Length: 529
Image (tube, rainbow, N blue to C red; front, top):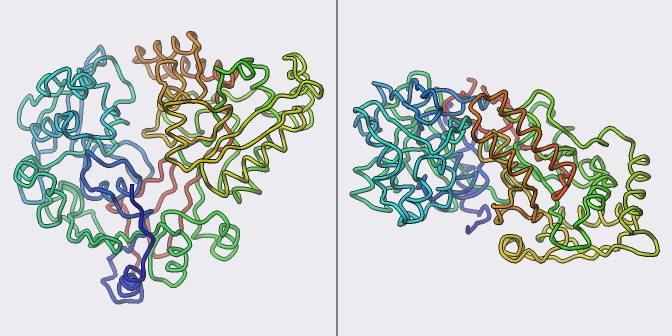
């Protein structure tokens, strides 16, 4: 994806659109991570794009301001006894922005479009639980075989291959957003242009000026338009986080979607009520290549994990914007047990952990006279470099001799995905939906693209399979917790930190609720007069 720094032209636009009264009081000037690569919901892959699409379109279900799943275009739904057939009842007053009624057939068209190989959807696999979805997406079946059908104008039936209790969570992702069939058919890829776009959400697209701003206007055809307070949204791209901070401090934007870590302390000191640092659904971790003989012993991997001072990493390197991680699944995730598993030694003092880790290394045959040589691979970043350097120092107590291999991000992840020549490699994962499966599936033996630890444990995979066939959410959560316990005991990937979202929010912007998904739909916000 091409990113463009916030330019002088864009800054001038922000100054023109500032909060000093130059615009209507109900215009929200919203700092965004970057320019969108596309506003085609079937081809997007970034958070910046998801923020905008969440305002333009409404899926069958949506996240509310606290990231709870609530009815969207569908006012209700039913599930078959075996958990494989979902029937959605679309609102009678759900319309497109041009006045066309939103129908079940529109969703059939949209689901078929994202699965069609010709579309080239990057995230089509999110919807693979739908019956025949993978076969359709790979070209082995025609799109007509996809498990979606319109029962009538306002009733949509979706059939799944197997029971998927987190299916509603999947539908909150932008891959589940509908497209307006007639617009796509008439304009092709240009349906995303302001003059062509027909949307069904709280807002319509009025302007899309590269490197400058994206302007959305309130959609009078939206079924809940009477409850939408903000009349206009101006999304302004700030890849340089410090530039957004300066604009916010000058009262030129209402919010910034991310903040520079090195400035967090100052901002928290000067604007304690405006800085929002909140647990985010993501884990920063090191993948340990278990396929290499020297790293194949779980005692070695456990020892390497035990001596890492995660609190130091969080406080000193990441400026308090990350949370020490002693488990794999982030805290606060949906559909999980009340007390998720953690490393058995999580509550031990660091000195006691070091003593136990040294003993584990000796049992595995390593010590001062037989040092373990380990290379840490990471993608270019000062924070990644500082993290690797600190961990190398922490590992020295075990007699580990550490070297480094630094690549740009594309080369680093290509290596992890295809070659896996690393010893230990930095990685991170932000959940696409709030369910532990979205993190635990990374470590399956049959998921080589993301299984950076080369982990092969039939017991682990079997537990995930068992959970996939369990419709009772409480029972399923217990099975997934057993899988995480097995993973933590083996430590093929070492969780280091849980991400936090970092935002600046003006006092005038009302209705902002911190949540683990960092979703803040404009329709639930207002601006104080």
